[in-house]
Length: 145
Image (cartoon, rainbow, N blue to C red; front, side):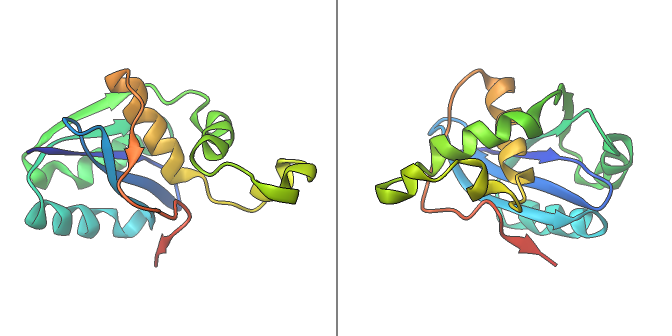
């Protein structure tokens, strides 16, 4: 079963998602410093059967693509307009508010959250035109530093 890497590129950090298309499942979601993305992808490729890499076409996408040429994998750029904005809504679909927290404005829960991995998920979902589920309780705010 081939897996796909999706990247939401940025100047200082990138959101990255590893997903299995046939199962419609996300197995990994992380935020990686941009200067570490090449090493991180190299490691994933050594461990997983990666069929392609999908990269958002925004900030620094060209530089990230150049860093990933080593992979010899199909690299696809895809529209990422408004993914950061849309990530806020998708965050609450993935992690619904429950209990008395429901009385607090939603914005309070995501003020300082890093939504880059959710943006990468949105790029993936837009590309395949399907919603993905999480394999486990993934923390989309995890940083690899």
